[in-house]
Every structure is written in structure tokens, then in C-alpha cells.
Length: 89
Image 1 (cartoon, rainbow, N blue to C red):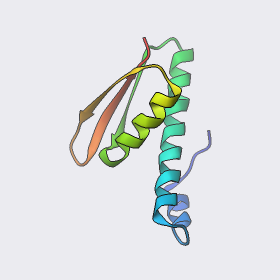
Image 2: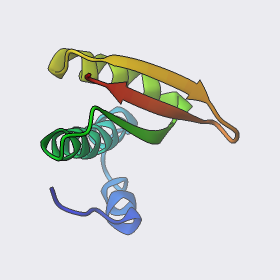
Image 3: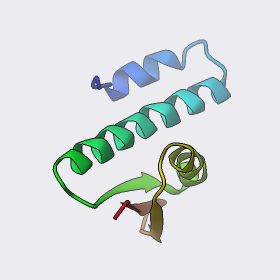
């Protein structure tokens, strides 16, 4: 996994259509979550939790269910965010 800064993401927006930027952003977020899930599983943990934007949750859940057999819980938070719990126990 490689770190991506906000400046790098903004630099992509100069010539790309909006839908490409959104899909790329979702892929970056998903790959980070996926990496953390694998890391936690190797450490013997049975769940992972993180905060995501409400606008992203449907796409992220769709990707998660394609890769993992798990249960999830999405709890709404303030300011357009949600807490995502992924449980594979």
C-alpha cells in the first residue's frame, strides 16, 4: 500500500471526468480498508472499524461483499460520516 496525499488527488482533477475521479477515490479507500482487514486478521483480530463518508458507503459495501464473507454494521455519525464495522468472526 502506498500513501496518497490530498494534493495528489486534487492534481488528478485537472483533466479527468468526475466519474473517473470518484471511482479512483473509492478504489483508494477500499484498498486501504482491505489492507487493514488483512493486517488485523493476521494479528488474530476478528473485526475492523473505520469512518467513511456517507456518499461512499454503498459503493464500498458493494466492493467489500465481492471480496469478503463478513457481516457489516454502518452507524451514522455527524457531518456526513458513518462508522463502518467489518466483522469476520
